[in-house]
Length: 363
Image (cartoon, rainbow, N blue to C red; front, side, top):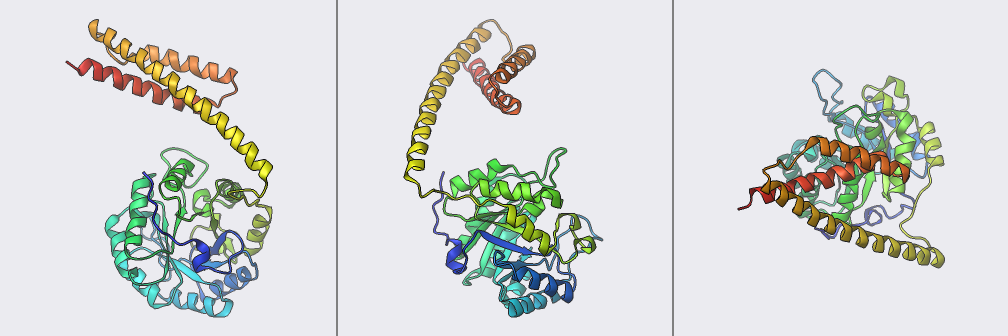
Protein backbone atom coordinates (compact mmCIF):
# COMPACT_ATOMS: atom_id res chain seq x y z
CA UNK A 1 0.00 0.00 0.00
CA UNK A 2 1.45 3.36 -1.08
CA UNK A 3 1.12 6.46 1.13
CA UNK A 4 1.42 9.42 -1.21
CA UNK A 5 1.59 12.26 1.35
CA UNK A 6 2.84 15.74 0.43
CA UNK A 7 6.31 15.92 1.94
CA UNK A 8 8.55 18.77 0.84
CA UNK A 9 11.68 17.96 -1.16
CA UNK A 10 14.94 18.90 0.58
CA UNK A 11 15.44 21.87 -1.74
CA UNK A 12 12.25 23.40 -0.35
CA UNK A 13 13.86 24.05 3.05
CA UNK A 14 17.48 24.13 1.87
CA UNK A 15 17.23 26.23 -1.34
CA UNK A 16 20.98 26.57 -1.97
CA UNK A 17 21.63 22.81 -1.97
CA UNK A 18 23.39 21.69 -5.16
CA UNK A 19 24.49 18.19 -4.18
CA UNK A 20 23.10 15.35 -2.11
CA UNK A 21 22.37 16.43 1.46
CA UNK A 22 25.39 15.96 3.69
CA UNK A 23 24.97 16.38 7.44
CA UNK A 24 28.15 16.16 9.48
CA UNK A 25 29.55 16.90 12.91
CA UNK A 26 30.56 15.08 16.09
CA UNK A 27 28.62 12.19 17.53
CA UNK A 28 28.63 14.20 20.77
CA UNK A 29 29.39 17.80 21.53
CA UNK A 30 32.03 17.67 24.25
CA UNK A 31 33.41 21.17 24.68
CA UNK A 32 32.81 24.56 23.13
CA UNK A 33 36.27 24.44 21.53
CA UNK A 34 35.78 20.96 20.05
CA UNK A 35 32.38 22.00 18.67
CA UNK A 36 33.51 25.22 17.03
CA UNK A 37 36.81 23.92 15.65
CA UNK A 38 35.08 20.95 14.03
CA UNK A 39 32.30 23.13 12.66
CA UNK A 40 34.66 25.72 11.15
CA UNK A 41 36.61 23.05 9.31
CA UNK A 42 33.46 21.36 8.02
CA UNK A 43 32.01 24.70 6.89
CA UNK A 44 34.96 25.13 4.52
CA UNK A 45 33.69 22.17 2.48
CA UNK A 46 30.78 23.32 0.27
CA UNK A 47 29.43 19.76 0.26
CA UNK A 48 28.46 20.02 3.96
CA UNK A 49 25.03 21.62 4.31
CA UNK A 50 24.04 20.96 7.95
CA UNK A 51 26.11 20.70 11.13
CA UNK A 52 25.05 18.00 13.57
CA UNK A 53 26.02 17.47 17.17
CA UNK A 54 24.69 15.19 19.88
CA UNK A 55 23.59 17.09 22.98
CA UNK A 56 21.65 14.35 24.77
CA UNK A 57 23.03 10.87 24.15
CA UNK A 58 20.78 7.91 24.98
CA UNK A 59 23.20 5.15 25.97
CA UNK A 60 22.46 1.47 26.32
CA UNK A 61 23.85 1.31 29.85
CA UNK A 62 24.25 3.96 32.57
CA UNK A 63 27.71 5.27 33.27
CA UNK A 64 28.60 6.01 29.65
CA UNK A 65 28.92 9.60 28.46
CA UNK A 66 25.34 10.80 28.03
CA UNK A 67 26.06 14.18 26.50
CA UNK A 68 26.71 17.65 27.87
CA UNK A 69 23.01 18.49 27.99
CA UNK A 70 21.39 21.84 27.33
CA UNK A 71 24.65 23.80 27.31
CA UNK A 72 25.35 22.14 23.97
CA UNK A 73 22.43 24.03 22.44
CA UNK A 74 24.29 27.30 23.08
CA UNK A 75 27.32 25.89 21.26
CA UNK A 76 25.12 24.98 18.29
CA UNK A 77 23.78 28.55 18.28
CA UNK A 78 27.39 29.77 18.12
CA UNK A 79 28.11 27.39 15.21
CA UNK A 80 25.13 28.76 13.30
CA UNK A 81 26.18 32.35 13.95
CA UNK A 82 29.86 31.87 13.06
CA UNK A 83 29.56 29.49 10.08
CA UNK A 84 26.08 30.12 8.69
CA UNK A 85 25.40 26.39 8.63
CA UNK A 86 21.96 25.16 9.75
CA UNK A 87 22.33 23.11 12.93
CA UNK A 88 20.57 20.08 14.37
CA UNK A 89 20.58 17.51 17.15
CA UNK A 90 18.76 14.35 18.25
CA UNK A 91 15.76 14.68 20.53
CA UNK A 92 14.57 11.75 22.62
CA UNK A 93 11.51 13.25 24.27
CA UNK A 94 9.19 16.26 24.37
CA UNK A 95 11.40 18.25 26.74
CA UNK A 96 14.45 17.90 24.48
CA UNK A 97 12.34 18.99 21.53
CA UNK A 98 11.00 22.06 23.28
CA UNK A 99 14.50 23.13 24.33
CA UNK A 100 15.83 22.59 20.80
CA UNK A 101 13.05 24.69 19.27
CA UNK A 102 13.52 27.46 21.84
CA UNK A 103 17.22 27.51 20.94
CA UNK A 104 16.34 28.06 17.28
CA UNK A 105 17.73 24.81 15.92
CA UNK A 106 16.89 24.19 12.28
CA UNK A 107 16.78 20.38 12.39
CA UNK A 108 15.84 17.80 14.98
CA UNK A 109 15.84 14.07 14.51
CA UNK A 110 14.19 11.23 16.35
CA UNK A 111 16.55 8.41 17.23
CA UNK A 112 16.01 4.71 16.58
CA UNK A 113 15.03 3.91 20.15
CA UNK A 114 12.49 6.75 20.22
CA UNK A 115 11.03 5.85 16.81
CA UNK A 116 10.19 2.44 18.26
CA UNK A 117 7.80 4.08 20.76
CA UNK A 118 4.62 5.60 19.28
CA UNK A 119 4.00 7.35 22.61
CA UNK A 120 7.35 9.17 22.47
CA UNK A 121 6.91 10.08 18.80
CA UNK A 122 3.44 11.49 19.47
CA UNK A 123 4.77 13.62 22.33
CA UNK A 124 7.46 15.02 20.03
CA UNK A 125 4.86 15.58 17.29
CA UNK A 126 2.72 17.58 19.71
CA UNK A 127 5.68 19.87 20.45
CA UNK A 128 6.69 20.54 16.82
CA UNK A 129 3.11 21.20 15.75
CA UNK A 130 2.74 24.64 14.18
CA UNK A 131 6.48 25.09 13.52
CA UNK A 132 8.51 24.88 10.32
CA UNK A 133 11.35 22.86 11.84
CA UNK A 134 12.86 20.04 9.80
CA UNK A 135 12.13 16.70 11.48
CA UNK A 136 14.17 13.64 10.56
CA UNK A 137 13.09 10.18 11.64
CA UNK A 138 15.59 7.36 12.03
CA UNK A 139 14.43 3.80 11.46
CA UNK A 140 13.37 1.83 14.56
CA UNK A 141 15.94 -0.59 15.97
CA UNK A 142 14.07 -3.53 14.42
CA UNK A 143 13.26 -3.74 10.68
CA UNK A 144 9.58 -2.85 11.09
CA UNK A 145 8.55 -0.69 8.12
CA UNK A 146 5.08 0.01 9.51
CA UNK A 147 6.54 1.33 12.76
CA UNK A 148 8.83 3.62 10.76
CA UNK A 149 5.95 4.77 8.54
CA UNK A 150 3.74 5.32 11.59
CA UNK A 151 6.32 7.62 13.19
CA UNK A 152 6.61 9.65 9.99
CA UNK A 153 2.82 9.88 9.71
CA UNK A 154 2.56 11.19 13.29
CA UNK A 155 4.99 14.00 12.47
CA UNK A 156 3.17 14.73 9.22
CA UNK A 157 -0.19 14.88 10.97
CA UNK A 158 1.29 17.55 13.23
CA UNK A 159 1.52 19.75 10.14
CA UNK A 160 5.22 19.19 9.46
CA UNK A 161 6.07 18.76 5.77
CA UNK A 162 9.84 19.13 6.06
CA UNK A 163 10.49 15.47 6.88
CA UNK A 164 13.44 13.22 6.07
CA UNK A 165 13.88 9.53 6.89
CA UNK A 166 17.29 8.38 8.08
CA UNK A 167 18.45 4.81 7.47
CA UNK A 168 20.88 3.95 10.29
CA UNK A 169 20.63 0.16 10.19
CA UNK A 170 18.99 -2.37 12.49
CA UNK A 171 20.00 -4.35 15.55
CA UNK A 172 21.75 -7.48 14.22
CA UNK A 173 20.52 -10.91 15.30
CA UNK A 174 23.89 -12.59 14.82
CA UNK A 175 27.54 -11.88 14.11
CA UNK A 176 28.07 -9.24 11.44
CA UNK A 177 30.85 -6.91 10.33
CA UNK A 178 28.46 -4.00 10.88
CA UNK A 179 27.48 -2.31 14.11
CA UNK A 180 23.91 -2.20 12.80
CA UNK A 181 22.84 -4.45 9.93
CA UNK A 182 21.92 -2.41 6.81
CA UNK A 183 18.98 -4.60 5.70
CA UNK A 184 18.55 -2.53 2.52
CA UNK A 185 15.28 -4.26 1.62
CA UNK A 186 13.52 -2.42 4.47
CA UNK A 187 14.59 0.91 2.96
CA UNK A 188 13.36 -0.23 -0.45
CA UNK A 189 9.99 -1.03 1.09
CA UNK A 190 9.83 2.40 2.76
CA UNK A 191 10.55 3.98 -0.63
CA UNK A 192 7.74 1.95 -2.18
CA UNK A 193 5.26 2.89 0.54
CA UNK A 194 6.27 6.58 0.69
CA UNK A 195 7.69 7.48 -2.74
CA UNK A 196 7.78 11.25 -2.01
CA UNK A 197 9.78 10.90 1.20
CA UNK A 198 13.45 12.00 1.10
CA UNK A 199 15.67 9.28 2.56
CA UNK A 200 19.28 9.71 3.64
CA UNK A 201 21.73 7.19 5.07
CA UNK A 202 23.70 7.25 8.32
CA UNK A 203 26.77 5.14 7.42
CA UNK A 204 28.46 5.97 10.75
CA UNK A 205 25.91 4.03 12.80
CA UNK A 206 25.63 1.22 10.28
CA UNK A 207 29.39 0.76 10.12
CA UNK A 208 30.49 1.30 13.70
CA UNK A 209 34.02 1.68 12.31
CA UNK A 210 35.45 4.19 9.87
CA UNK A 211 36.92 1.52 7.57
CA UNK A 212 33.43 0.65 6.30
CA UNK A 213 32.13 4.19 5.78
CA UNK A 214 33.05 4.46 2.10
CA UNK A 215 31.49 1.11 1.19
CA UNK A 216 28.19 1.95 2.89
CA UNK A 217 28.10 5.55 1.62
CA UNK A 218 28.57 4.41 -1.98
CA UNK A 219 25.90 1.75 -1.55
CA UNK A 220 23.52 4.45 -0.32
CA UNK A 221 24.07 6.50 -3.46
CA UNK A 222 23.76 3.37 -5.61
CA UNK A 223 20.36 2.85 -3.96
CA UNK A 224 19.28 6.37 -4.90
CA UNK A 225 19.32 7.93 -1.44
CA UNK A 226 19.29 11.72 -1.22
CA UNK A 227 22.17 12.18 1.18
CA UNK A 228 24.33 11.08 4.08
CA UNK A 229 24.79 11.78 7.77
CA UNK A 230 28.47 11.20 8.58
CA UNK A 231 30.03 11.85 11.96
CA UNK A 232 33.16 14.02 12.05
CA UNK A 233 35.32 15.00 15.03
CA UNK A 234 38.36 17.24 15.25
CA UNK A 235 40.23 14.36 16.96
CA UNK A 236 38.28 11.06 16.85
CA UNK A 237 40.86 9.29 19.02
CA UNK A 238 39.75 11.48 21.95
CA UNK A 239 36.01 11.28 21.29
CA UNK A 240 33.88 10.52 24.35
CA UNK A 241 31.38 8.47 22.32
CA UNK A 242 31.59 6.27 19.22
CA UNK A 243 35.22 7.15 18.53
CA UNK A 244 35.75 4.27 16.08
CA UNK A 245 33.11 5.46 13.60
CA UNK A 246 34.10 9.14 13.40
CA UNK A 247 36.52 10.75 10.94
CA UNK A 248 38.36 14.07 10.89
CA UNK A 249 37.01 16.78 8.57
CA UNK A 250 40.05 16.18 6.33
CA UNK A 251 39.37 12.45 6.07
CA UNK A 252 35.69 13.17 5.46
CA UNK A 253 36.67 15.29 2.45
CA UNK A 254 38.81 12.44 1.08
CA UNK A 255 35.91 10.01 1.48
CA UNK A 256 33.54 12.38 -0.33
CA UNK A 257 36.03 12.81 -3.17
CA UNK A 258 35.86 9.08 -3.90
CA UNK A 259 32.07 8.76 -3.94
CA UNK A 260 30.17 8.46 -7.21
CA UNK A 261 26.78 10.18 -7.02
CA UNK A 262 24.03 8.32 -8.88
CA UNK A 263 20.93 9.90 -10.44
CA UNK A 264 17.35 8.69 -10.82
CA UNK A 265 17.38 9.29 -14.60
CA UNK A 266 19.86 10.00 -17.39
CA UNK A 267 19.57 12.72 -20.05
CA UNK A 268 20.22 10.16 -22.74
CA UNK A 269 17.35 8.94 -24.99
CA UNK A 270 19.38 5.89 -26.07
CA UNK A 271 19.83 4.88 -22.42
CA UNK A 272 16.09 5.18 -21.74
CA UNK A 273 15.20 3.15 -24.85
CA UNK A 274 17.64 0.39 -23.97
CA UNK A 275 16.47 0.37 -20.34
CA UNK A 276 12.82 0.09 -21.39
CA UNK A 277 13.68 -2.88 -23.62
CA UNK A 278 15.53 -4.69 -20.84
CA UNK A 279 12.72 -3.99 -18.38
CA UNK A 280 10.21 -5.42 -20.85
CA UNK A 281 12.24 -8.62 -20.95
CA UNK A 282 12.26 -8.72 -17.13
CA UNK A 283 8.47 -8.26 -17.11
CA UNK A 284 8.02 -11.17 -19.51
CA UNK A 285 10.31 -13.46 -17.51
CA UNK A 286 8.52 -12.52 -14.26
CA UNK A 287 5.20 -13.40 -15.86
CA UNK A 288 6.57 -16.82 -16.84
CA UNK A 289 7.91 -17.32 -13.30
CA UNK A 290 4.49 -16.61 -11.82
CA UNK A 291 2.81 -19.01 -14.26
CA UNK A 292 5.30 -21.73 -13.30
CA UNK A 293 4.74 -21.05 -9.61
CA UNK A 294 0.99 -21.35 -10.19
CA UNK A 295 1.54 -24.76 -11.83
CA UNK A 296 3.74 -25.78 -8.89
CA UNK A 297 1.00 -24.77 -6.43
CA UNK A 298 -1.47 -27.10 -8.13
CA UNK A 299 0.96 -30.01 -7.77
CA UNK A 300 1.57 -29.10 -4.12
CA UNK A 301 -2.17 -29.18 -3.46
CA UNK A 302 -2.43 -32.59 -5.11
CA UNK A 303 0.43 -33.85 -2.91
CA UNK A 304 -1.39 -32.43 0.13
CA UNK A 305 -4.60 -34.29 -0.73
CA UNK A 306 -2.66 -37.51 -1.35
CA UNK A 307 -0.83 -37.18 2.01
CA UNK A 308 -4.14 -36.61 3.77
CA UNK A 309 -5.66 -39.73 2.23
CA UNK A 310 -2.68 -41.75 3.45
CA UNK A 311 -2.37 -40.03 6.87
CA UNK A 312 1.15 -38.68 6.19
CA UNK A 313 2.57 -35.47 7.71
CA UNK A 314 2.82 -32.35 5.60
CA UNK A 315 6.42 -31.64 6.67
CA UNK A 316 9.05 -34.28 5.92
CA UNK A 317 12.50 -33.12 6.92
CA UNK A 318 14.45 -35.61 4.84
CA UNK A 319 12.65 -34.48 1.69
CA UNK A 320 13.21 -30.83 2.62
CA UNK A 321 16.97 -31.35 3.15
CA UNK A 322 17.26 -33.26 -0.09
CA UNK A 323 15.33 -30.59 -1.99
CA UNK A 324 17.42 -27.75 -0.57
CA UNK A 325 20.75 -29.42 -1.37
CA UNK A 326 19.57 -30.21 -4.88
CA UNK A 327 18.30 -26.69 -5.62
CA UNK A 328 21.43 -25.05 -4.24
CA UNK A 329 23.65 -27.28 -6.40
CA UNK A 330 21.57 -26.53 -9.49
CA UNK A 331 21.79 -22.82 -8.63
CA UNK A 332 25.57 -23.01 -8.47
CA UNK A 333 25.74 -24.49 -11.96
CA UNK A 334 23.63 -21.53 -13.14
CA UNK A 335 25.89 -19.02 -11.36
CA UNK A 336 23.17 -18.01 -8.89
CA UNK A 337 24.01 -16.72 -5.42
CA UNK A 338 23.76 -19.56 -2.88
CA UNK A 339 22.12 -17.40 -0.20
CA UNK A 340 19.54 -16.14 -2.68
CA UNK A 341 18.64 -19.70 -3.74
CA UNK A 342 18.35 -20.85 -0.11
CA UNK A 343 16.06 -17.96 0.85
CA UNK A 344 13.95 -18.37 -2.29
CA UNK A 345 13.32 -22.09 -1.81
CA UNK A 346 12.84 -21.74 1.93
CA UNK A 347 9.97 -19.33 1.20
CA UNK A 348 8.57 -21.63 -1.48
CA UNK A 349 8.78 -24.71 0.72
CA UNK A 350 7.30 -22.96 3.78
CA UNK A 351 4.31 -21.91 1.71
CA UNK A 352 3.99 -25.42 0.28
CA UNK A 353 3.82 -26.84 3.82
CA UNK A 354 1.28 -24.18 4.77
CA UNK A 355 -0.98 -25.13 1.85
CA UNK A 356 -0.70 -28.83 2.62
CA UNK A 357 -1.58 -28.36 6.29
CA UNK A 358 -4.61 -26.28 5.31
CA UNK A 359 -5.77 -29.12 3.06
CA UNK A 360 -5.26 -31.64 5.86
CA UNK A 361 -7.21 -29.46 8.32
CA UNK A 362 -10.10 -28.95 5.92
CA UNK A 363 -13.19 -31.16 6.16
